Image: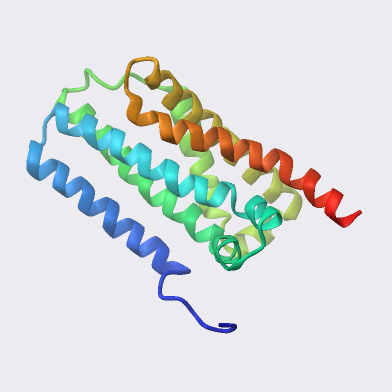
Length: 198
């Protein structure tokens, strides 16, 4: 109904994402202990949750153009909160990487400049996801930053997950397919919208 506020929208999405991912990591560490195996499991798990939350934000506007309905309206309305939830999940991801470094006495992981760049994008996009900070940098700079960051994360997830498929880790196949579908939706939605308007 118009004007009805759903229980699962806005900041509640961020809160529930933080709780669910946090519980997931707690379960991993309770079952496997705090060792290298557990940290690597935590890294893989948080990469998947980050990807799912990222995709929700990545395709929101395109899905709304193609299929205007209640769900896509809700998704677009909460796009910012899915992006912030991805930032929370990826913070857990960084904690797991730090834990891996700690349990291996610095032997792993190796320094990854592309990973560092990803977190630079993540920090900048998170900080500018609020009205005051977005207004401060200006609409043009905001669009450039967020478009560049979103496509950088798409490339990072797609490359990382697709290479794991070739290592017989088929659990990454559905996410890779979703990533490919997402970029196709983003590419075709403006063209289809222009045809409908004309």
